[in-house]
Image: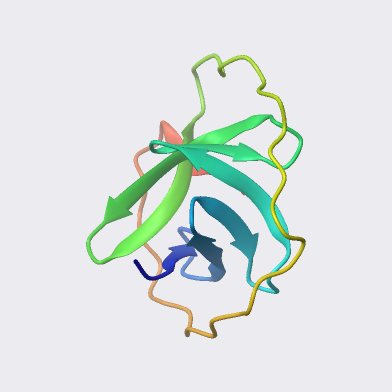
Length: 100
């Protein structure tokens, strides 16, 4: 399976998911996925992976409690970097915001 490219709602390219791990646009390890839940490198909940149209985003709800932190997972520090363009911004409902 190929990389999943992740964008921010303003259209900027955030990074990518490869083999269940999240990397920045520079290839630096940022966290991991459990199903559609995204955890940062320190084990803190960041948000949920959502596909809107043809693109994927990591979003979090502003007004909900976050799950209990997890034991951090280790991945290689860097990954080979895809270089996609930025995309058009999207409008999010008021209860959602970018997680990163």
